[in-house]
Image (cartoon, rainbow, N blue to C red; front, side, top):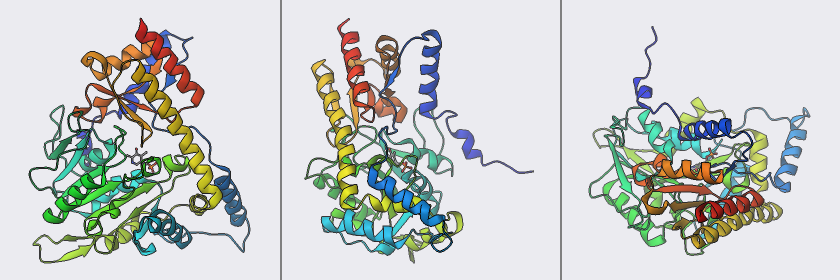
Length: 411
Ligand SMILES: *Cc1c(COP(=O)(O)O)cnc(C)c1O
């Protein structure tokens, strides 16, 4: 008899976006003629840029000929891509990462969800609140999160990100073994300054804490003073793993490619504390056993992002989304709403008027304006009283959604 992993039973049965889809479908069933616009989705809408498409076609052609066909690639990723990453994402910022410290993956969700395998199940960990659900749920699955009381998990340190602290969490007053940080942040769309990030690195150095830094949205940063990588901070190589993704940067949500950086100096301790082991070597061992690499075609596609044409084209798409974000910020602010984020990230974190609960506001806006948002409380208890809007839609849809929200709010 196969016995199940009982930790799975503790998970909330539905993923947040399944709950939203259910409510939207219920609305559509009773309003078949309504044209619903979603500002709730976390997926991108603009197609791959020409440089990427061309590289993919070329890679497919190579696969079609015996002389240039590629089978299994290196588990860590092709060197051509790891070198392009080092040269373009790190060197220009004065960060020295060796290609051997870069692990190409099939997206940041896999790696942020799997990285916890490298450390004992009973490590303590902290997350910002609200938070990208993957960090919590992947720890629930191995028993690290404890039990759920209807709002919080018993073994998780929650770091509230609120209006009062500018959505930058306070350093915990006790030590934790691991901490997940994501900047620019999903869902709040806010960023962390160099000084604030330095506090986290110093906390980690002092407490021997492992920082898991999700930089999936770094390409959306507009302000030149905001750090793109935690390795811009001195000492971070000893304490931080960093995750990158081409999903939002270059529309790779369906192509699947990203990478993780694990510096050579990054180690974790044996049970009795007498030995330290490099996590990079363990991760390579893990990947070699459970992952056979990202497809050659996807890696060539990712490489093309770093060509001069690729860079210009990717920037154009990011500018398009950030143009949506600016338009949304301005229109919603003019309607008297309090709007955060949307300046260095594709997400806007909007305070519901008059303290309306998030799910209630979601329904009101769906029925009143046929516009879908994401209730902030779905990302954690401190998200209550906010909704997340994304700028990943078409410009025309965004404009129409804003027009309808304006009309609805004027009523
Ligand atoms: C979208 C997203 C990712 C990227 O996921 P992929 O698996 O690379 O598509 C990672 N982290 C956060 C916070 C995200 O929102």
